Image (cartoon, rainbow, N blue to C red; front, top):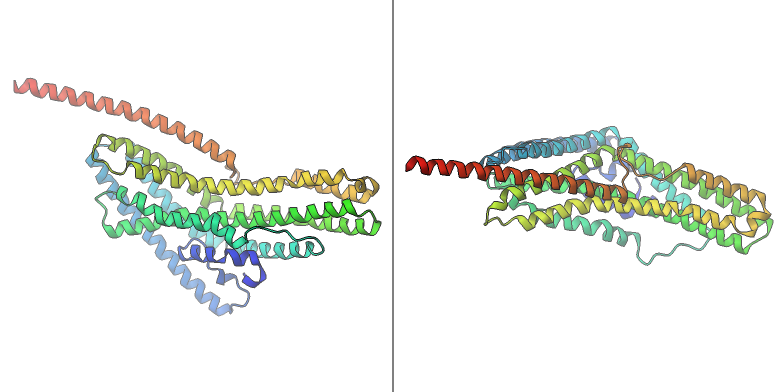
Length: 412
């Protein structure tokens, strides 16, 4: 991946470097064409050892957290399903990291193709926009990425320890707590990596949409046959680029399929686990972590919401292309030149068949509709959990009252 070959990749490169430091994605240097083959092999071998060490650390820390959780559960006499939820949560973390290492190995070439497709599409869109008025943004792409992703990364890194450190409990050593906080941050950063790729695709869609609008403006002002033929060629090129963007979205969805599926499951289960412990410790008047638990739930929810929101931005921008085609089809030039009308009809037919969908292997679509359904489902499980805990507390108090009554009668 050459930074000077693509401005989009150059703008995203600092974030990709951060993810490579945390072992979430290969360093961008592995994809440079000027890197010597032997040096690349040495770097890949060293990075593979680094990933293995991260996986071993994650497995050990999850084991340490499971042992500490069992002690915490025994202290509060909460041997219901809290142990199962906590263990499942730790297993999901291990599964995410193991799969992430396998994903880097198995989809290394796919990631290289994604980088190449982004760079090639940017070059082709720049060529296609020559002769048209360029698209102007109030802010540069670097600033927009910093505002959309960089700011959220800073908040994740800063707020995650503040909200979760005390909740790790007294049975975990401070070194294990530090490593656990790093792991929690690494897990959530995978979602921001997906957001970076979605925002790059969003930028490509906006550029293609702008070129299509400029073609419509030219058709509205020029009626000569030569000009219409040139605009038909530009329209066909825009159609091909839209199809390539659709293919790029499929490649990105396949690359993040299992990673995002496990991440979404982990976040939802973590929220239920947090609510469960909030109910268990609600009887303690000295409990100081209740408001921090709300902050943790908000962090987990917002992380999923941002990925759904940016995906929705891409979908809405892509779905606005047929409206531009319909406006062009209503121009007098479309009725006068059959070749233009045929090109518009072919483009519209392609847009009907190639629907832009960000999906996790067909299990669910990543959009705002999915997020709304997830929130409703989560609230349903929380209500069931609260009802179960109320019943459990009532039975416990009843048994304690019976035991105390029997003890008083026996002493009397």
